[in-house]
Amino acid sequence: MFITLEGPEGSGKTTQARLLANWLRAHGREIALSREPGGTPIGDQIRSVLHDPANTAMDARTEILLYAASRAQHVAERIQPALAEGKIVICDRYADSTLAYQGYGRGLDLGMLQTIMVFATGGLQPDMTIYLDITPKEGLRRRQIGGDEWNRLDAEPLRFHERVQAGYRELVRQEPQRWVVVDGARSVEEVHTEVIGAVRARLEAVETGFIGPAHR
Image (cartoon, rainbow, N blue to C red):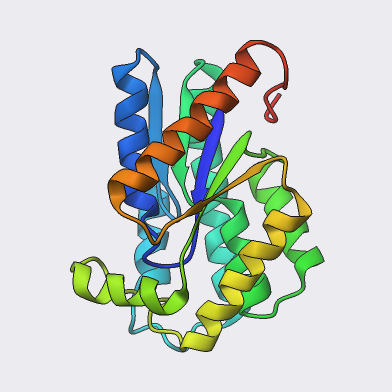
């Protein structure tokens, strides 16, 4: 099973991905926990270029191609092998981030982005995507006070992040069967409880044959 977590900056994805992985391991599941951009040695090198605040001259086309390159390596080296071993893969961001950030945020052509993503991923889709919703203003405030990496995308104007959030909500509307929307503005514990409930229900549905894995 392939589970991704998405959301605006500061929504708590990284924390919730880690807590979910720990909970599943405690219940006897084999887990592969990863992130994007990055997840592999090559991908992490690309991540450093993408997130470097000094790279303000980066063209939007360069940005998307670097993200796609990191993702292609991630799928080939990490995600597909883990799925083949029967592990549950949990990923902090995946292809939907491209549509939200470079599509709705940057204004790049969505059809073109879809084509690039399919090429980079080989068509691999998540079985389940958890969207942690939070206002851009609150998310950026959390980033600033949390001491985490403040990267090139964080530094974009608030209106950019508002377009990203609107883009995510549109993606949810288009494919509600895959997405689970969770209010990310609440406490870590409250969000974790809801995430666990949603994942437990989806696992039961897959394992009873009610729905099939998307990556098959």
